[in-house]
Picture 1: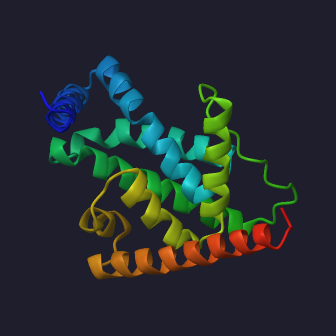
Picture 2 (picture 1 turned 90 degrees about the vertical axis):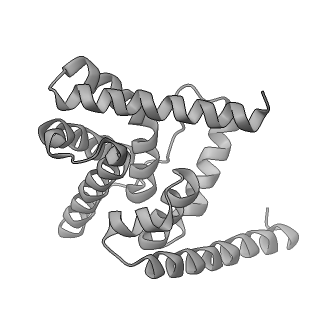
Picture 3 (picture 1 turned 180 degrees about the vertical axis):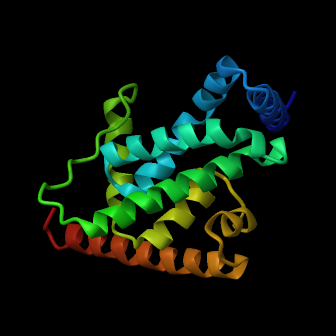
Length: 196
């Protein structure tokens, strides 16, 4: 079996496993729901951190998302769209937190983002570096890049999640790439200028 075929089979098997867990969770099986949420935890963490840039807020958003998902999973019409549905709930939770941040003036400095406990030192460094680069982007650009490149959603799925047009998603991606290019260009300039 070729590596590509193996990966395709692996993805199909994973998708079927998730769909089976969704069906069981819709039937109010708490063990199946717990296993289902465990399959989604890293994905939810990456999205929440990309939007919120804060560990505690990301944990709150994920916790609320899991709770809402349990309460509303019976309303999910198609098991094939579970990840899109879950991501939409998470994005809404993150937006609620961002709105509440604007109402209150935060006096504490944001904590430096730490990597996941199971990461090697090199992975943690790359993770922090990636988060620093992504944090330089406006939120509306950061989230489309995260959903497209890190989570593998199509521009159509992202458009549905964010309630914007597909063209708007593509436009944000172009602007995000341009902003990233400027940030990286500035970093290279500083390095060549002897600042680093």
